[in-house]
View 1: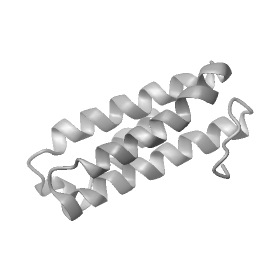
View 2 (view 1 turned 90 degrees about the vertical axis):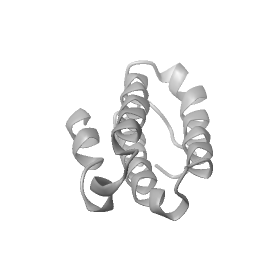
View 3 (view 1 turned 60 degrees about the horizontal axis):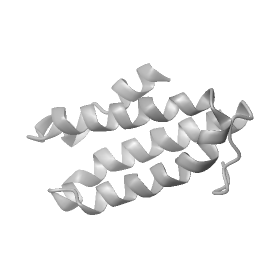
Length: 98
């Protein structure tokens, strides 16, 4: 999963973005921290909905509007993939269908 994070934040218009390194680090840290909930079910129940809201909030504050949508879309898909994996491992029951 960690490799998916790094690979997922590459490609497309991202290469031309002046903020790509900063946001790649932000998203990578965000997603890697989320992976820790695989081991802590109780924290997952509280923190995953907060993290989902945090990702939405970060997107609303993005500096380049529509140009940032590609990165946020990738980060969101990776987040959903993590949550789905946690659900599969029964480490988290996602109320959003995952």
